[in-house]
Amino acid sequence: MPKSDGYAQNVQYPVLGDAPNIETALQTLVNGVVPLGTMRFANANARAAALIGDYAPRPGMITYLIAEDRYEGRMADGSWQPLSPAPWQPLTLKSGFSVHSGSPGYRVVNGSVQLRGRIKRTNGGQFSTGTDWVFATLPAGVLPATFSYWITPVEMGAGIYYGRTQLDSDTGDLMIQTPPGATSTSNGLHWSGLDGLSYSL
Image 1 (tube, rainbow, N blue to C red):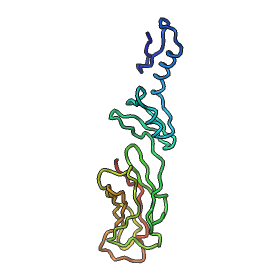
Image 2 (image 1 turned 120 degrees about the horizontal axis):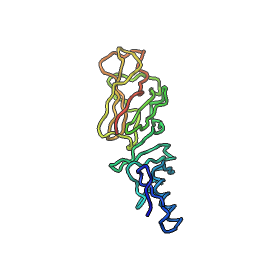
Image 3 (image 1 turned 120 degrees about the vertical axis):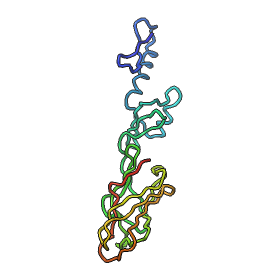
């Protein structure tokens, strides 16, 4: 009868009294060891296709998804959670907006989404006060359960030192608004920043 490894990981190996069957012995050993290492799959779909039936995922498994370039761990609730930051994805800016600096984008890190970069109006104009500027839309897979709001930096001008960025959890629209009531001048309000903004999924 097979015995289990000394590390209490339930990896079984044959003993001398077992009936000789090299295929069964090695299959039992391999199937016990593989789930304890980091398994590699082409992408999440390939993982889902492979880990079924007797080989269904178990809590504690770790996988690396090549296409996503991400390590994920299997949780007790049956979900896969990222164990490493996902690559930065560029924000698709709406017409009338362009990159000011910092490669505007987003990424998923351990159940949170991070934003970065600065954006500007393509025509070089100001973010005039009291106006809602919808500048990008995030995909459905990275949206929070509720609306999110942040105080964010803007280029100083017209007595204004900050703006508000809002994320619509229903549509994914990202919007900037600078406070109403100030008198616009030719100085400032030509860019708004996203660095440091984050929210939980």
